[in-house]
Image (tube, rainbow, N blue to C red):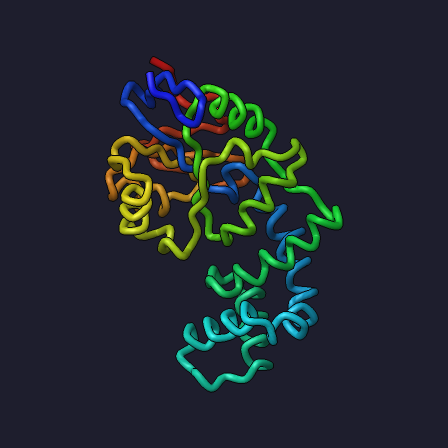
Length: 245
């Protein structure tokens, strides 16, 4: 048995193979993508121009503007054109780091004013809390910024789940469709790839994690794509073939 931050970790097996941590995707895995697309994205898009008008002169605002310029390879892009580019990315649902940073800052305002609470599938909160109580290290890897991830789990319909989560990874680690990103996460955690379990609804992400040597579980929520026969597929975290040794 291992002791993690005062919690007893008895040892966890996935399909009979030991794992040392679980890494979860968000959209389509813990949270209905409709919440992100129909609530969070419109909220940020409607406020982006006003927000950047106030935020751009600050040091952090200048950093974001320079990130936009770097993304489009134009160091002379004006502030107005940078904001226009952010809006273009937002409307196309592009997973670009400076856009994700701005969206996270705007969403913070929405959470603080209780304009909305984060959606969770019914099984998620109970299992995150149960795994946490048993000492399982839990992490998030999402295309949303780390700040946005923390906000989402701090303001859910089931309460604050951030105490259950050990850490967060976003696109600053690397694209979710590239095996190198999962190799980098394993190195950051100081764990062997084979001891990490990634849960996602996205076949491409699962393929990248598997290529990096991770164990993977496919989560099929209502409306998500079908998976191949080579994957363990569940529609509820309670169906995962997890056992404690």
